[in-house]
Length: 462
Ligand code: NAD
Image (tube, rainbow, N blue to C red; front, side, top):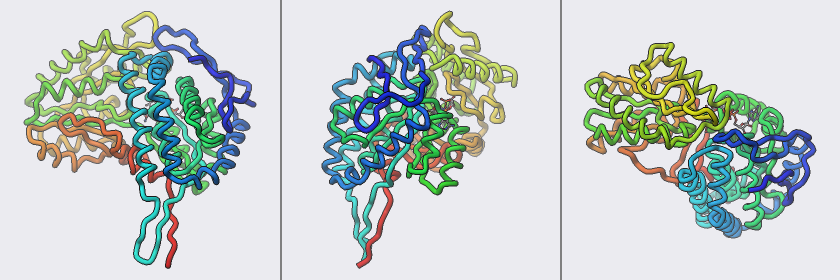
């Protein structure tokens, strides 16, 4: 799609007050594919005012009518799914089939789920002599990352709109074209002016101005833990609501009774998809000591299949960061069994699918989020040891457990300090709450739990 040279505010594309420009670069060939304005604090203020002005009417719109707009939004996204996939592929670099299936497919499903939830959720409930009303929180500031560019926008904007909130979105610098496409879709879907607003811009400028704006009632942020901590502190100081979706270092626990080949195969695929740039990726594979060598061999064979298929990482900076972690892994004594720090191609920000064996729990590569196609395989002696390792990071976003018996896997999963666990390769569920324990975040996205984040209660007594 062609880039807009304005910001989408109050129902129209308008010139930015900020004079900067962000260049969008294709990670495969390093060519500039578009330029978007870098909005500044004045632009954020204009957008927040528009969202505030639109709030009373949107909050008073009956849920069924809000649901109808969300259904229209879903339909526009579905009609433009090929364009969405091509845009994500152009600015993120993910292979087109993955963009079609995941980057376009998932947000269409999520938008649809909120059209249904808005239509069916009871926004009031009787509790004894009270009626409890669920009311919108107000103006939402949404700050999103680049790794699932449309999914992360829809996972915030759709529940916010369903709840009756209005929104100002500041998307990631690397993937603003997908955000502009979403703004076009919101416009086509007939959302009233000011209900959804888009300010492209730099994190420390536009993002920070949005997080600090006194007229924003809730900040919903997905991205790095470092920025998330700052946003949480700012929100705490202002006593405003905040939702944080941060990093992860999720464990894929393969119990001795599991189908080892399947568990390793799915585990490797989980890490390599989207070039490892997935906050919920199972980047630590935990294998019993008796099956360890076999699992390493299986993982090496599985990783080899991704050599040609894997896309680049999003930027030169990300490539550098991932390389740094691979070098650190070697330095700290882990055994490199696939891939390595050298780029496999002359052009583009590619990283070879990389697997480390003999990884111990205290190593940097077993503790920190790498956000690249790097799998670590750790050895455990018994179930208690596996649990200690699985729970032994500051994160707790996702995970997996494999066992011959489902009940055995469930019993282990219940002891994991993490927000989601897939049992024997359970499928992604767009209605299941997603979010972190510990430093992986605060709050939940998706489904009814995700909608609840954007509501506040008022009790009337009779
Ligand atoms: P980031 O946290 O810097 O960026 C995420 C969003 O926050 C972007 O829209 C950015 O513009 C904005 N932002 C940056 N600084 C800000 C500030 N001071 N105030 C307000 N908003 C600000 O993340 P990144 O640099 O794109 O990626 C760095 C690392 O973060 C990755 O390597 C990865 O480990 C992690 N990450 C995690 C997720 C996730 O889904 N949990 C997503 C992307 C990145």
